[in-house]
Amino acid sequence: MCGIVGYAGKKEAAPIILDGLAKLEYRGYDSAGMAVFDGNRLNIVKSAGRLKVLAELTHDGQTMPGFSGVGHTRWATHGQPTDENAHPHFNKDETIAVVHNGIIENYRQIKEKLQKKGYEFRSETDTEVLVQLIDYYYKGNPIEAITKVMHRVEGAYALGIIFAGHPGKVFAVRKDSPLIVGKNEEGGFIASDVPAILKYTRDVYFIDNQEVAELDGNNLKFYSVDEEELKKESVHIDWDAEAVAKGGYEHFMMKEMQEQPRAVRETYEKHLEGEEIKIDELKLSDEEIKALKRIHIVACGTAYHAGIAAKYIMEKMARITVEVDTASEFRYRDPLIDEGELVIVISQSGETADTLQALRLSQKKGAKVMGIVNVVGSSIAREADSVMYTWAGPEIAVASTKAYSAQLVALYLISMKFAKTRGTISGDEFKALLSDLKKLPEQIEMLLGNKERIQRFANRYIAAKSIFFIGRGLDYPLSLEGSLKLKEISYVHSEGYAAGELKHGPISLIEEGTLVMAALTQEDLYGKTVSNIREVKARGAFVLCVTNTGHQDIEADADYCLYIPVTNSYFTNSLAIIPLQLFAYYVAVGKGCDVDKPRNLAKSVTVE
Image (tube, one colour):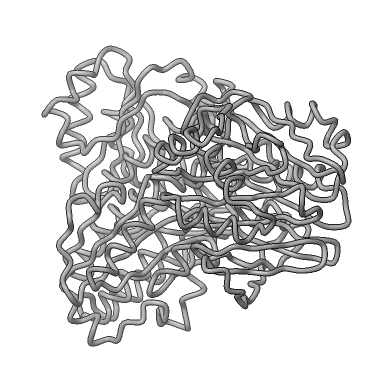
């Protein structure tokens, strides 16, 4: 949520800030603004609406001269998306400006105390209390004022701050919200995420919780909350700069769907040595793997659906009890975690606030925590006891596609490793699984090549009001993910159900012409799902089925069929999700929706 970019150096700041904010649009926002110091005063321009409004107001930054500044794209939490509530926020004299990502939980108490001291507030936001509190503590030393504020406020925050009294400098602060710092020969940068500054530098510093960074055109300094100077090492980012560009595609989502074969291949190749799976990140001995009694998987959204699929696979393949929780509920049921159990947290960004809190709770309870993340150096990657990267590359579209595919592969590898170590599959079964795993990239590529047929079908359902996805076994989490993709980007109401639950309520919603998408990839459940198809057909539904090649007999019951190549039943989600992603995409495009930046959503959910 929200995007922060700051610059201090030898070049004009405003065009760099605008360029960086444009690279962060995928994070979701509803207003934007900048503050730039021109040598005499802070100039502040902000507006509700898209970033192009800010660009037009400043003539692409040309009307805001100056060599240091901060910018922000806001996703509203406190107060409506208005010009007044947009960031940056500033003190009465307009000598201090702050941009903020996160939520200040005790802002009301602070606001009331400041009002009693004569401070007036212009906005409805929690962020404004930060700049007024900095003003209250500021006596000429920015670090001293900032650290005093850090001791007073509660909640999550990433801050970019500039002081008119300290020209050419930008200050950055972090607690539980992501923020990075970078530097090249011409200046220093702060940003919420790597893509914002990738064209300027590949060496970045990850600010840890309750740390402060001070940067100008020549130096970077880091401080603890107790004002002690810190030494930090940079991390080199290997992403290709073109990876965060559309590469000729109309949308990032289509580009990222097309990158799924590569994402899948690179994820499994990182952990294969000949015919052996090597997951050194697990940091579990064979004896510990054999002794495992239970695994907890915790995630949100799409990553949660990958976790549900993993439950089916791990329990059946490796014979380990697996519990799957939505991260936002995990803490509040006070989960029972015993010594020797493993917690796996999954997050594309590695910054998902609820998942990060679940990680910390699990560690307090004495569990080993493994993170499956896509972003090197992210909070979960740094705080987990071990981390397994998915190597999907940067994912810009809000709706996750290639990261989901890579997460599935990471979970397949863990399942296969555990099963082989525990002796629950034979050597021949393991070899067959490995062979089918290696075929997935080519099979996904073949399915992506069938997109025109799916587009034609999607065009028939642009005006649909409700669509239902059903499946049994592994087809159930597939249905959840297919439904989520559709509702995320097309705003069509859709629901994913375990097919056997239809008769327990949802079938009352089926009427003439309702589209039902039925997944039938699990051979042992095929007949039961056919019965569910007949139930909805009898009530007037139009049925699209996704099934395995060789099941042409289903055409007697379904109205339209899409076939996936033959693979092991454990891996069918990796193939069957492709036509569902494409269907969601083409419905959204046909409706004229903003596919990459759907309304009300953010790529990285950094507040609870």
